[in-house]
Length: 297
Image (cartoon, rainbow, N blue to C red; front, side, top):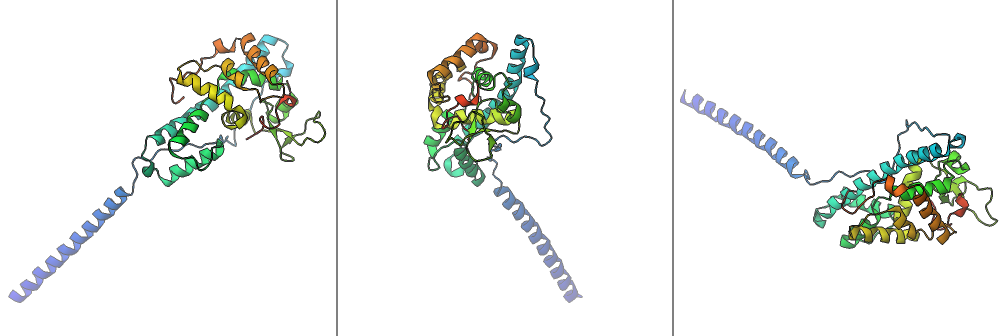
């Protein structure tokens, strides 16, 4: 009887040890999972604009307007909606970059590093640029474009939305492309030239490409420098001010700059639109375009 009791106690002890070891194992699994979770990971937005395949695009028939005032008003409203959307997206990207800047460099996840590398490629920043130098360059490039500037250029480049390239390719900013078949061959293209007028999937794609071009192409460094200095000095960032940097946007040079500034002034675009200031951190035909500068990037 004593022997049986001893065996029974031994069995009970073994069962308790087995169950206890199982609990310890489960708890260690939970601990491991918790340790592998990066609570500081930042949500990374898509860098380039991607539209929905179900997107419905409604384009006003600007060529049929008889009232010039209504035509201009509706055109500005039409383009402005897309500019606001893209500028908001740029502000979101910028906010993400600023959040990453606050993290210690050795704490960035592989996904965050890859995201920054893609951003560098998109905005034409040398892949070897890192650290403070990288964030300084991004600070200059990843900023909104004033609505007044975008509206004035769209009106000039697309003849108020009535040009062949606006109608057939949603090209409102006279942007070129250089691969054969990439766009529309202009009838007045001079012999020996191979550029085409870029075709976009939607007006939003066109606006996104235009703003990315302003923010990344070496020809528009002056635009970005003007914008950055205004922001540093806490002054309004206006289309009129940034137009001074568009010397290479068109073969017309200074004349083109004056046309943009006159378009802004005559249509009172600066006063109609809330100017962007540095206080928010989150925040004609295509034949006139320059072959090197005004191309799809």
